[in-house]
Length: 514
Image (cartoon, rainbow, N blue to C red; front, side):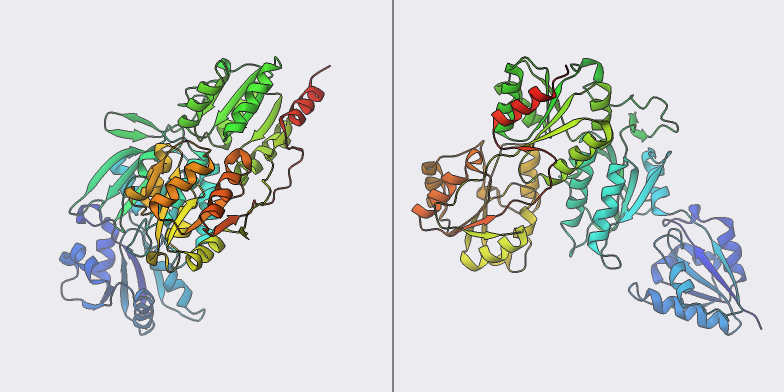
């Protein structure tokens, strides 16, 4: 006797959203295999059936049970919430199915979390979009980050599943940081909790605001693209983008000087370099990652054109191309390797000359222990001290405070007074009493006073050069007999490098059109 296996989707959690095909499949089934919660949504249609339930963590056992019943000639319904073919049970059934199985199989589609959440927000997925699970139980975290990077670089709208659990607190913020590397902070997004279930909440926020929030496994995040708009309480992405220049950026190519030198600056010496280039009579545009960075440019380089924000590679490409940029000067921080690699690629693609200003490393005139990675620094710091001062910036804080054994130490952080950076530190668990927001660089005396007051017994820093205050930190650590751990600079194969302003200016003069 030939059995039949129905792979049944019951949607997000309300009977009104269960399609008629499900009712037909349930009526025809003798055996119902399910997680117990799902039965509450289909109770009226399974009375008198042979019902088999297994716990939430025994998905493969449920699939194998359904297969066994179908092989025995029974008509079986294997139940899943959402769509059984998307992050769900169908693939387990197909994996364990045998080539010589003779029972019939029919998959009943349903409304998945992406559809349900999008419908509560409006129409944010009306053009190309992606879904991404942030759980690393079934997929290596490195793969999740790589896929997130591609989603962000392509400026796809996206839905994130399995956003945050008690065991996985920081991963979502790493993914949001990746989004912010390519998408503008003002990108419209949605937070949906318990879609179509009791306790449902729906909120429209910006991408930057997402970084300040807490989530759980019942929450999905919807990320817009640069065209996503708001109307009343709804968000939507235009079905056809039409004019690709129709973006929410406040800076348009028409307002930018033509044939300008674009200086990508993330440091005080980068801003000073931009001022020197402008003093040579060359048009200059200074691009910074944050509005705070743009404020510093305007204070220190009055009259220069600024572009701020994490524009994303697509928008950056457009601005460079449409403004007729002449040269890219990469004066970003020595550790901003991803940005440097993106600028190198854009220079090659657009036929623009690329020049790297690499501030010189400072000489080690005081004791220091050098490591290659932040993870190495975290392990060594915990072996050297208990009250550890981090002068590594906000991006890598999680490598320290989430490392094994980090709870046994106290972590102290000094950051530039940028709200995004401060919020990032708070999000990873740095107490506000252990945070100092102040613009550097700092003198040896200032470091000594701060570290003595906080009782610091170990310091971790980057090899930021004298322009970044490295020498003053090393001298202060030596004066206080505090171990100093230095994370060495990453290696990048720059096409052209200058270590001083004169070298950059000479190269620019050579690049001048005849």
